[in-house]
Amino acid sequence: MKRWAWVPLLTGLYLSQGLPFGFFTQSLPVMMRQQGYSLPDIGMTSLLALPWGLKFLWAPLVDRYGLPRFGRRRSFIVPLQLSTVVLLVGLAQIDPTRLDLFMVAILAVSFFSATQDIATDGLAVGILREQERGLGNGLQVAAYRVGMIVGGGFLLVYLARRGWAGAFYTMAGITLLCTVPILLHKEEDRAPEVQSPDLLSLRWYWRPGLGRWVALLGMYKAGDALASAMVKPLLVDRGLDLEDVGYLSGTVGSVMGLTGALLGGLGARRFGRQQALLIFAVLQALSVAAYGLVAYESTYERLVAVTAIEHLTGGMATVALFTAMMDRCRPKLEATDYTVQASAVVFATGVASAISGVVAENLGYVGHFGVAVLLCVVGVALVPWGMGAREK
Image (cartoon, rainbow, N blue to C red; front, side, top):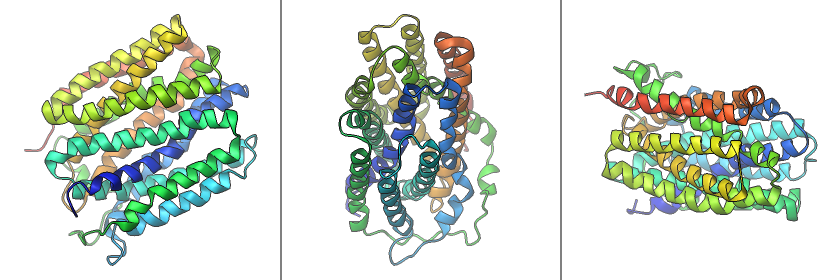
């Protein structure tokens, strides 16, 4: 493919993944808190992301199978994109007070998005040169965060002004538009060398020093995930309405999240993988500590400042981690190898998010963010140890 043709292609795919994820991680907690749900109930909605943690189970199938004439990756991505569009249209028909039906539909969207992500990650690792991976991951995280911001921040504003159905029709339309670049993309036929994929990809697990690397993957974002899950309930409890929360996530989060993702891509290239991981992990820990300060004594201005800092440092840390993950992928098995690593991250962050409500309920917001800072510090300490496990 022409160089840089991957920019609109990957931008559209990762943005469309972030749309539904942004809704159930940002908009849904606000809606539930306003309806009187407890913090533990809100925290448990993080389990809707379960398919993202389990996708390594079917990643080898996505790596191995597909329609060569249409493209191994495209033959998964296009149908899944269109299925997501249909589900989003269906969500527009559901009464928002029927959380049971809504949760089932969101779980289905999560499964489709997670499977699309397997194929998209394989496509990305395959077409990006090593020197492009920092920028490519910066673009990936930036596009995904824009999707989350649209599905979270802007959707909250839309819900407040225009209602439920219109918001989901808009999301469906954006997802459909994001499908156009992959429809126009001509994929190279890169059939995998492995003819009988192991569903658990055991050969990946047998790599030397893998336990140390997986420990780093699991802990690097766990503290940030524990903290982030309770930010929206905190904002509601501090008196912010839907439009205020939408502004913080949409406008402030949008600008700073994009900036952080791009800086993270540049940092991964300039400082090297380990140095970038270490620097951005420290900044991430400091941003979580700042949430503890505003939980103790907050003003609107402080909430804006801390939200900006968190989106900036979160984007930088995520890009650095994803770039290091790409470096550990085997040629022609990119989707499986990347997905196994991503599943470790998602599983750890999912557990942290799921227990966040219980922690906040028992320790209060200040104590909750204090625990999150401790987890961030563990993540910082694991960087040199985990990165030292790289294969020679």
